[in-house]
Image (cartoon, rainbow, N blue to C red):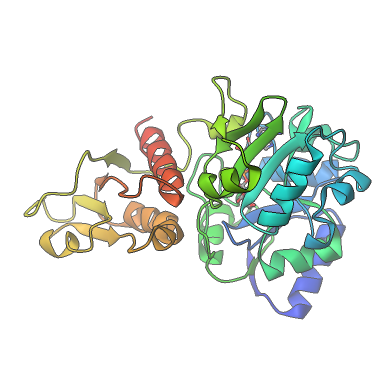
Length: 330
Ligand code: TXA
Ligand code: MG
């Protein structure tokens, strides 16, 4: 897999590849994405194959900031017949480009494969200059996170190489991801706003702009990728009820710890540790890299302290940890 610096020349080369229907891994502000033309069945099929992703798990369509208004999305055939137009426009104006994905009624230009045959489509405009340059040059891009299905999402070009080397020809290196967690996914329908996945845009901020509460996603799996065993390390991950106790020891090299208390690390002796924080933003940015590092270290078990922030990004961090723990025990 070629790792290309994000120079103007390389961006132009990758945009040309994408226009020909080839795939490329690209940086976004949330996590790296595996991009292909959103309107090209061949490219979409390659995305599912490269990730080992089941075709019942639909993709997010990324759009350029220049087309990031509801009227433009409708003109471009990506969405159609949105009932709450004023609400959607308000959300787009406040959060795009950025880590908010909206699930809206699907337009005629979105192939069945992108939406897994659903009558809806997930759309977002990413806040990353490299992603935006590619979208300007190639048009709407479908891009799931650039990891193999069920594994930890990549937040650096090196992570993408670890996940997809030999399966995808190229990754554009846009540096480490500034947000570090995937976008928040909200469905807009008759029921109002449903939170399908907590993520980089805090639910409270979305509610403030919408002037209405987000309701929980619902019992049936509205986002099939939101299966409990996502984001899984290879090692077993156990979530603790409280902070790691002072003086915790383990046979050398057997235990690894994901901590939120910066003082805990110094007390742990033989335990490989990664500390997340001090702010929720820092913790979100570092979460997947820390999980990857601990997964690669010489330990049999990873324990994680509870995430200390009840709201905002804390919600998304807890969600990812719970899924990672569930997946690791399967
Ligand atoms: O931050 C992000 O959203 C990243 C970057 C690359 O943009 N992308 C990402 O894609 O996380 P992915 O494929 O890993 O997760 C997309 C989620 C999946 O769980 C999928 O089920 C859900 O979006 N989704 C897509 N279309 C949907 C739809 N029409 N209805 C409900 N859920 C949908
Ligand atoms: Mg993913």
